[in-house]
Image 1 (cartoon, rainbow, N blue to C red):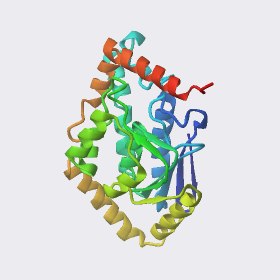
Image 2 (image 1 turned 180 degrees about the vertical axis):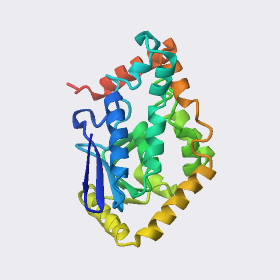
Image 3 (image 1 turned 120 degrees about the vertical axis):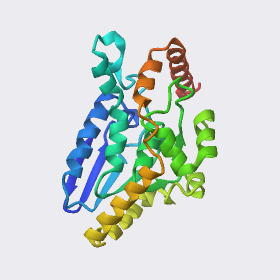
Image 4 (image 1 turned 135 degrees about the vertical axis):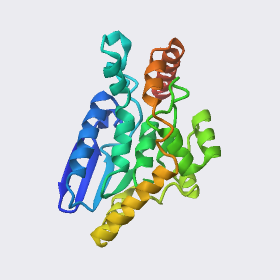
Length: 264
């Protein structure tokens, strides 16, 4: 994970390319700190959120699942473990509340938490062929971090239930038809499309832009995102140690390795 600021432009870059930027505890901590640092630079107009390497974000790292320090076996106090469980929710809230306009530059894959990173951004520009899905039910895990009310806000109840319950893959073109993605483009011009959107926002009057950014954020709150998810972290921690969930995660990982294994 790294962050940089140059003039009016900021970048938040997921930087675990060998694992397709899969999410682990270190990434969550680093990204939370990076978001707060970038947001403290009040001269920024636009922040671009992207992933290094072949994909945007492959979701939870199956080799190092998040919230390890929140497990009872660690011996940490209940209050400490509860704080660990809330890290994801607070990260998504921090991205949503950034003062600058946030643009998700998405390619390759956006899975589970990667989809939620997109939801937290103001604009989403996605490369053709990007693989998107929410595998949490297959993993025996709840889709937490305030994900469900945010998805209902963005997509409505019917699509939210379908995507979470079935875990099916969906395409950038479908997401655009749902009016959830702003633009779908070929991979070779993805960067140019993001730069065009960036420049359009950088030339706007700062005061008016900040006013409307604040209005959009308050609108999101009124529409219910986050207001019904205060116990998401507690539920995620509880299910993480359930045998049924552990078996589901092992089976999912085995299935994934079997599909990825080269055929003779």
